Amino acid sequence: MRTINKEQILAKIGRVVVLMGGTSVEREISLLSGQAVLAGLQRLGIDATPIDVGNDVVEQIQKAKPDLVFNLLHGKNGEDGVVQGLLEMMKIPYTGSGVLASALAMDKLKSKLIWQQCGLPTPDYRVLEEDSDWQQIVSEFGKVVVKPVSGGSSLGIAIVNDATALQKEYEKAKEFDQHVMAEKCIEGPEYSTGVLGDELLPTILLETDRQFFDYEAKYIDEATRIVCPVDIPQEQMSSLKSLVRKAYDSLGCSGLARVDFMQDEAGEFYLLELNTVPGMTSHSFVPTAAERMGISFDELLLRILNFELGS
Image (spheres, rainbow, N blue to C red):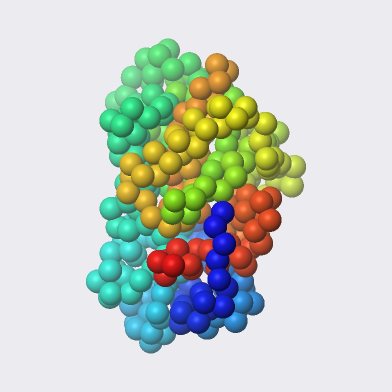
């Protein structure tokens, strides 16, 4: 990645407010991400202050008078364009993608439709309803991944292979979002690549002994393994980087994001989702990938700020 000038960034950055917490089901992870970033910014000597987002967020932001907002709100109202729109109205710069890109990426159905229109590979799917033909979907797809259309941290996701379980998991997923989809299950390794503007972080391979990379695998299970660098042939890696780049650009993303995808038994890659506010704890995927290429957590923060400053 290109070199940056720490002193120049620190001289230009001004006051930073870190938005964290909020009211979504991902509040706990947001607090962890926000606290990690806040500590890093303060280690760098930046005038940084936290806001645990609630109903008085406008008043809190106005009181803090930030030059930049570092958005670490995961889930509803944080990744879906809502807080981005609020900050646009307040004329306050913020990290990450804008209103439209945030909304599109948060909606797995909308992002898949765009990727399909662009000719990018993504697993086939069906939108689930109360009167869906559960047996037909299982017969068509075999193993099925049930997902809330909007959401993160793998909450509400389940893998099933029979009609009764599909209907049952649909009802569970509705607790996280009113719209639920069934996606054809891709059998194979799962990968993730961080993107920061026009630069890509190293791709990481996610390994777990659990059925899939669920909430527990991401945040609780000590046996979870993150492999980096990955063992992918150079020619295939070039195609993979192009796919990640196109997934990011097609949604109009900006700043830091993370693209998740899987590889099937034939070696083909399939886009799963794009996260515009990826986790930023010291053990999250993006900081881990950066660390494997010699970029510390604090330097990663500097690079994010450098991008937002347009340097």
